[in-house]
Length: 363
Ligand code: NQM
Image 1 (tube, rainbow, N blue to C red):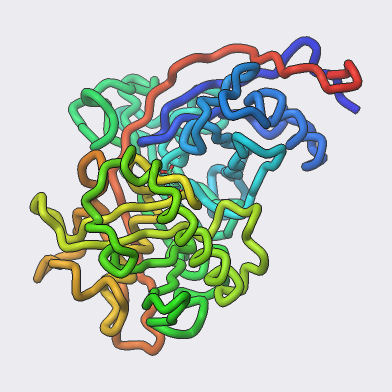
Image 2 (tube, protein in one colour; image 1 turned 45 degrees about the vertical axis):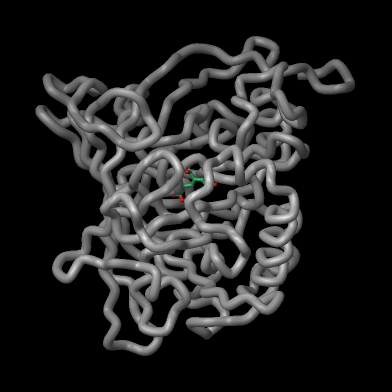
């Protein structure tokens, strides 16, 4: 077993509205069990405060990106790992479009890809689910430039844009864009649309769960009755979506929708999977917009979708997230064509992280 008493090379980055530890695959144990055990000790899990690690005590700040050289048409491979805060669990079952924003810059920093002069384009294979993402980011003079004028809701100030494009997102974790085969299912007497266009999500109307859909993060987080109902919905939806028992899984997410009220197309409150999201995930938003585009889905009647173009602004508790989603609605079921989003990312810290020793005193 590899020893890590001298630490592990690690870069801490903000990717979109999330934060995570980025590693080269070659710097981590090849054995997934050994790797996950190490990552739990790096992040400080399980512990609600992650006080003995570098995790930020929320699932949005307890994330890991593992990056390696690509093959075939991909320049890079990106494995996303969700390190649970409260349980000793690491899940590879979902993508993260937010940490994805840091993958290209990290790869340039580590010399995995050569920077272009001006900007760099990379093709990234999403190891968790298959599919390809493209990223374009600024590299003037062959160096990553993190500074820029792009603002994203949920992050103070501005930074350099990372333009993301997605291919083959349909059925990312479930194999099908509509994993239950239906545009609408009824669970606990509530109409839901189960969709997977990059992220498996259960979409329901906020009013059907007795809320307005405009509540703050804090109001949602303290509503124990609501959180219990969300858990019940996703547990049953998980089975219908072919994901099995999802009690200990980070997917499916649940998004409750309401009419927009800040000039966007749709208002959302998302649970990941039960704790509220302060915003909404990138691929989560792509999936929710996909649900809203369906002719008979639950979300469509709450959405004010643009008449032309594929850009849709999704309202969330800390602002709006704009995604481009193209579907071919002439097929049955509809086919996902492409999706895109603009994020920013920032290098926060580069160095050596020292994992908590194992309970037996080893590293
Ligand atoms: O949906 C949170 C996030 C995410 C995932 C989550 C994400 C995505 O906001 O692409 O980015 O859904 O757990 O980082």
